[in-house]
Amino acid sequence: MKSGATKDMGKMLGGEEEKDPDASKKEEERQEALRQQEEERKAKHARMEAEREKVRQTIRDKYGLKKKEEKEAEEKAAMEQACEGSLTRPKKAIPRGCGDNDEEDEESILDTVLKFLPGPLQDMFKK
Image (spheres, one colour):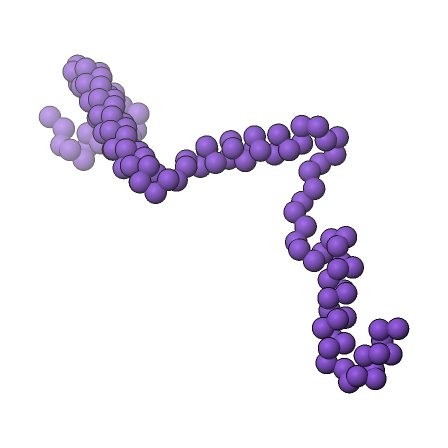
């Protein structure tokens, strides 16, 4: 009979291992148990996510919010609709006062400045 240390030394030196006849059966059972645990874990997470989605939907309904996907789809549809008859890309929104309507703004600024000038200077600029 070999002691524990010499048995391990025999394995390291390339000796024959003692094979457990039930080892393959135990390994299959262990693998099956792992698969089953993984399936249970996935099912649990799917249930939790479904619950979360219900809560999210109630909040969306309560506050009139839309899902991110819905928002993106609407924005894309709006862009496509705006570009439908155009051959070029859509124009970006131009802030007020930065476009071709500068003449009106300049006149109003000039009028405002003229109000603060003394009378003779106002007459000179108005001519």
